[in-house]
Image (tube, rainbow, N blue to C red; front, side):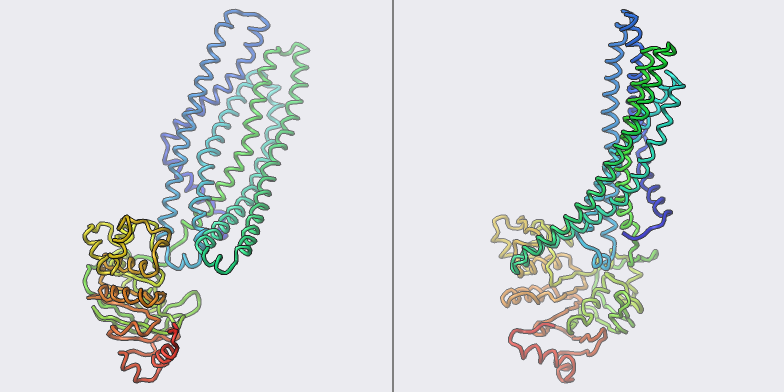
Length: 587
């Protein structure tokens, strides 16, 4: 977690409290229920005196008829108070958690690609699940119980001062001492809790990676190695959890001991006052019952404070993400553009990852409807170049223009509506084939989905599934072959019907038969669209109107296949190297 100042932490806590205050009417109703619980506890202690003095010692029959119904009424009201406060405060807690979880997810989705490149998927999942659940415990349980116990302490304090104010003064002297472990151990719990949450996030990330990569683990016989890694991470989490257990566990016995000293003194001094006649037995036992009841909520506050500290630590981790600023900022005067054929221009474009310059002085104009192939060795900057068009990243210098307009002056939603992307990694979701194809156009009619699948040469294999378009394809499309997944992705791009198309090595991982089908689908997809094709296999770019060669972040060569071959330069070397190898080396 990034280091934050005290002022930032206080601001986060204020924001959390403001979320709680939004449910003011439920809070007031819940507090009313808590007051009923606290009052019933105080009255229970108060009734000890009349029960002993009036019924058992004075044998007052009238009081015997009155007190039992009163006790029944008190406990009935107490039960209603418990139900009301539990329901209302849990409703408040769950509502706040939903708001936080929704805000966190929305903000994460709005963060740029660079954020996801630096963060672990499992760690982000842990913040949305584990950390938010810890806050839920704090808001719906610890926070509400703290209020209830504070009301109970106030009510019982009134009783003991009413019964014997001199003895009460001695009793409450112990309370400030009893609160010391609450504060001290609360600090320790918060520090350790942050470490536990970070360790849990690391464990979640590890699980995500090993589950997704299970095929590779098995293929390379790395099960034993991964088990050891997992055991090391759980051992680290265990050590942190035990530190938290020690901090939580020590506070209670210390408070028990301090409370025991206070009770021993009360028994000694109070008993002396009863023996000497300064107080009655009923008064003493009523006082003693109230004190015993008083120390119980004080002791509980220690455990509740630990839960609150854990929740505040989780809140810091959540706000650490929510407060993260996106590098991609939409101009306040940004405009929308209509769906139509577009030209794309790179004007003196520079781009850097961190401090390393990746693209240098790129000047390029791609006409509407033109197919541009981009080739070069791995790491030359091909994918980075096309990622600037949908503003996955922003240029360091220069500008990317659509029809002469800087894309930073176009709304993000409108800009990305103009663009469809098919990548080497077929990104599909664990939903039906229909839903995956309609992902870019959720309102599309079934007929349009079927037509898109036919144009992508996917209809036949979809139709052969027992459930057809309703077939759920599994996580990342696990039930489909590589070629089938890629054709679903092409159908999705076809259905979106965007005027600008980016194909990032869309066929590089396919076998020959699948590649032929995908190439046919791609030809349908490119018709009438401004297309950027990143290709490793130079044999797949014969349809390109123009080819550029990227080398060390610069456009080294530009022209048609024949013209570039005639230059005997970078493109010629790539071509000769690839076609001299029967396996088709990739670049």
